[in-house]
Length: 178
Image (cartoon, rainbow, N blue to C red):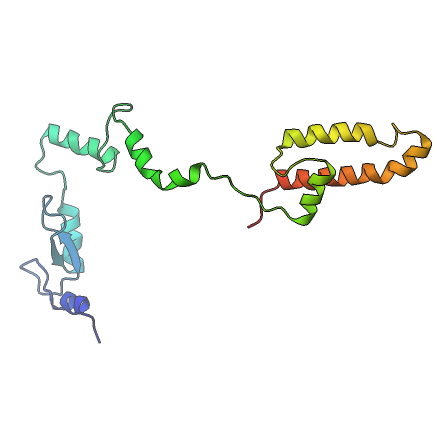
């Protein structure tokens, strides 16, 4: 069963008065009526396309205006810096206004929480604070700084500090998983 549009297409006769074939191919009626169509058969549409000139009848100034409009795809434009766009940007981002000051709570798993505790930092610490704290603890607990008796005893403490630093560093530098 044919749809209504298809039925109408098959019922049209070519707009060329000398032709009696079915008009399947639309062509604009005129430059002023680009959305109103006349229909041609395949042979007549080829002839129409060869002869039709959109710019026919335009003066030199009108032609210049058409060329200028085509540079911006017939969209309105203005000289750079002459339009106040602040209102448009504020309007576009009004939906984000409430979310602007909301702090993004990051998910802290048990391992990360334990790592912050080992370095004696809070979960809101930034990368610089973490690095500074790690350096001071590493200097204090490094096995080379300890004497032989303390070195064996505190070796695990230094390893824990280093592992905690790596866990925090990964959480701060790697993109969060969703």
